[in-house]
Amino acid sequence: MAASDPVPSINPAYELAPIEAGEWKGLMVQWTTEDGSLTAFLATEGLLFDILPGELRDHALMEMVLSDQRVVSSYAPEGATGLVRDFSEFGKASERYPISVRLMIDDAAVASWNRSFSSDIIAIAGLISLGLGYLGARGLTRPPTPLRQLDDALSRGYIHPVYQPLFCLSTGRMTGFEMLARWTKPDGSSISPAVFIPLAEDSGRIDRLTFALLDKAGAEIGDMLQRNETLKLSFNVTPDQLLGVGFVESLSSRIAKAGLNPRQLVIEITERQPISDFEAALRVSRELAKLGIRLAIDDAGTGHNGLSSLHALQAHYLKIDKYFVDGVALDRKSAVLVEALISLASQFGMEVVAEGIETEEQRIKLLDLGIQEGQGYLYAKPLPASDLIAKVEQGAQPMPKAA
Ligand code: C2E
Ligand code: CA
Ligand code: CA
Image (cartoon, rainbow, N blue to C red):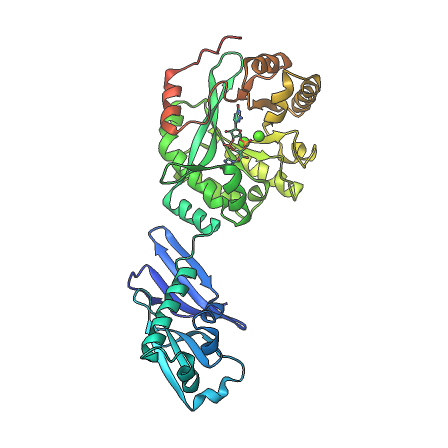
């Protein structure tokens, strides 16, 4: 795809340039903000077709040109060569963008088109204005796509971390917390990570998102972590991200910049997504171990990787999914599965963490089965940094009494 020099608009943050890819022609719109730039490609060729009514369109040549006269798109009906002799030319420039539309219409077609107008010229100029407004509405001010909204949210810092405490099931003492992403819109409403995490993964923005969260975590809870060296900070990384080129180097420089101690960090790798290369995973896991960063297998028991991930990741923690915790106090089968996971973990020298603990019965049952550490609404929901810091400073939490 070839784009040429852009032309600024009245608002210089917006720049336009013609762009071509093979037969395809269109308009590149670049929007530069303090945090970077967004680029949109508009297929303007098809839009031009909509400017004029059908009767005139068949007798007109239309061009969209930038203020420096470069042609962005053009439209001509089939067999339009006869136009060259007797035609009138009309033009209209956008007030906000350095772009105009130029029309050459067959005189005979103009004359027979609508005789009730006193001046065809005025009518056509009006039409072109409408056409440009229409193009603007469809192109330049088109409602943002989810991806553009995500980029916008990332650059404006609308995506931020919350922290869900992990605790010792017998004493209630806090052992650390998991960082979870939240997208809070300016109106206060929020979008679930179940929606935007897959979008960030599929569009190649997940590293940017993870690193932005770590930067924020460093800024808001870095000092508290330094004062409480036994607390750990867990964060979620997808298997593809872990195996991405240069992940460990980028991560290590980001955590140094964020002022985080790698020995307090735990990376949770979900079992819900497959690990594409077990040997590479083992190499990455060893590099992380050298830095002092530990790994946890997240959503254990629900996944694709079966037992292979246990070997490939050499993880420190096995995190049992809420799905099994939900059933553990209710049905024997869930309890048997949890027991099997615990026994597997102990043979691999891993510690077990239970996630999604909501009731006192679950906590007691998990303790009975031999699990020492957990996370869930029973103890705390994900909290903003200020609430987390307050909770850490309050010290050990008394556990709720059994019902
Ligand atoms: P996850 O890693 O399994 O995180 C646990 C989820 O369970 C969180 O949902 C948490 O709020 C919720 N949860 C914890 N305790 C309880 C409980 O007692 N009851 C109930 N009903 N729910 C509980 P959340 O924050 O909506 O996150 C959903 C998923 O989104 C996470 O599941 C994780 O897979 C993904 N995610 C969140 N943040 C990130 C991120 O920064 N990067 C990546 N790659 N994934 C993320
Ligand atoms: Ca997790
Ligand atoms: Ca889970």
